Length: 83
Image (cartoon, rainbow, N blue to C red; front, side, top):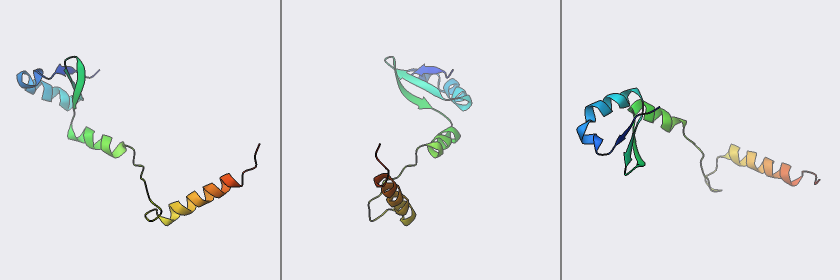
């Protein structure tokens, strides 16, 4: 379980907090509510790379192969027999 510190601990125990954050993410609370998480740059980079990479396009910007896939899916849906 990740360690939790208060935001007031930041100045008093910064060395301990940094040492702990090098092992695993550390959570900071303020007035009893989670406010911040401190983690290594490597963990942060890993999370960013693993995050959702969906994109939104307009008809002018959509890649041709994706547009063709969408057209085919729409045609398949339209031609699907009703139950």
